[in-house]
Amino acid sequence: MRIPWFILPVIIFFNTTAAAQTAQLSSDSNLVETGSRFVLHLAVREKPAEKPDVSGWQDVIPEENRLRESAWTNENGFYKKEITVIFFEEDSLTIPPVRIPLSSGDTAVTNPLDIQILATPAPDEIQDMAPIRDIQREEKVWTDYWPWLVGILTMAGLLLAAYLVNKYRKNRGMGTRSIHWPPHELALRKLGQLQQKSLWNNGNKKEYCDELTDIIREYLELRFGIPALESTSTELIQKLKGTDIPDETALELGNILFQADLAKFAKGTPPPDFGDISMQFALRLIEITKPVSSNEAS
Image 1 (cartoon, rainbow, N blue to C red):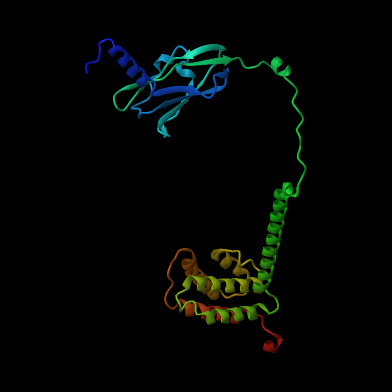
Image 2 (image 1 turned 180 degrees about the vertical axis):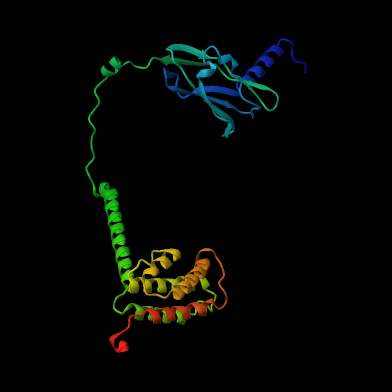
């Protein structure tokens, strides 16, 4: 069946119109105040090939008035994009259609959009507005105070924890520096406990060095009244020069502390017999420096 020649222009017109209507330009409102951001929405059914052609906007929306352009997103069968613009002058204008190149090679054309740009109210106009109504406050319920209650309980818990930790530290300090026994007896008891642990023989050399040097330092501090626990090994040897410790004993002590410091701080490995040597030295150090009782003196 042949189509009459006068029908062809009508068919071409409708096909062109259908293609042009596959894209849409819209906004949430047709009113916008000067200085306020205004979002324009583009929607097209077929996947766009590139950015839309908005060259026709130059007279109504200059490039410097286009604040942001989002990427294309696929929502409910439409590819959508948002373009945020701003206007600074009161006006009524028509935003020209946008040409959108499609991945098929065709071009979709949106509709034009009429908008009204209103001037932002001046301060005098704001004063002429109706007075603001007073806030109607809701009645207080106990849940309104819940954040305060949680904060108070949390603070009380932190204070209690700090008190218990401080008390534990004080009690622990009294245990490590107990004066229930003379310094030499306390040190000998702790050396005996260290020997029972067999830390050196079990490969825990760093832990052994930590405990042994702490026992020696604590003994010297309690025995001679010097800050041995807080001093470095070099400082400790210097402070011992004012005591009655023999020079050769102080020299041997310095060597023991040096070997232990290598194991504690430099991941060094002391000699294999260091465990026995250091323990025997600690016992001998206490023996030659402990106070002489009246019975022993006689």
